[in-house]
Length: 271
Ligand SMILES: [Zn+2]
Image (tube, rainbow, N blue to C red; front, side):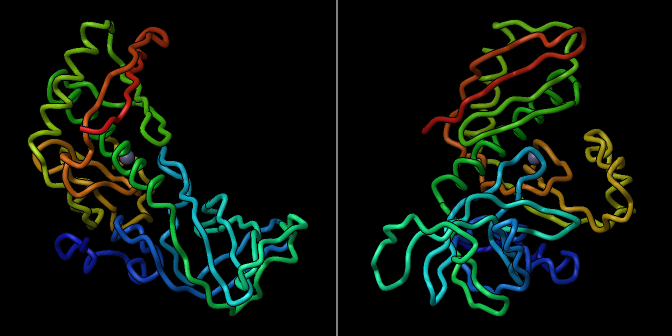
């Protein structure tokens, strides 16, 4: 699937060439070169990557990196001081012989300059994309119907939760919200990734509502996820191209986490 629109033109310099997930969530494979190796930490940096690092409530991708010397399993991806590190475990050699000694030591790490072919685990990533978009739809519905902003949340593949400062919460409200989310899914809203200059973003009522103006001003432009007609917010995550791709959502729990803090849990299932 292609990159929607021409938003990548407005992306910060170099981003579209280095953080491939930021401009094309559907990209599953890529070629790259090792630029830094942390042998003690068992992790490497690449000159470009499609692996999403844990952040913004969305867990990291997993997958593989293939080198001429063997196969590395990517078990974790983290951003540190702006740099993306891939934790890797050497699992086999490319001659087809699987290692019998359980080789997973730093010996399996490639050297700086090594070419790698990356492949992300698409099943996990697509589940996370559907889940992340489902949570933004929940935000949009709660704001549209109750004027209440989200205050926190988390997700794993096909499961997520968000907190809202509702005065009261009930199973009834949960059922109502579930029906509203599935309505919006069926409307197949287009989802656009955009990059907005800070002076534009900071004056946008929808973005102020989601507290984008509290993001450090050195972050310019801001990456925006726009569920057209429903929800706009500053966001670094990976999303589907249409709400229809989410499938269906079930609200699985509504809890009070104290005064002015109510939690809604949801599950994403196939349509
Ligand atoms: Zn998000």
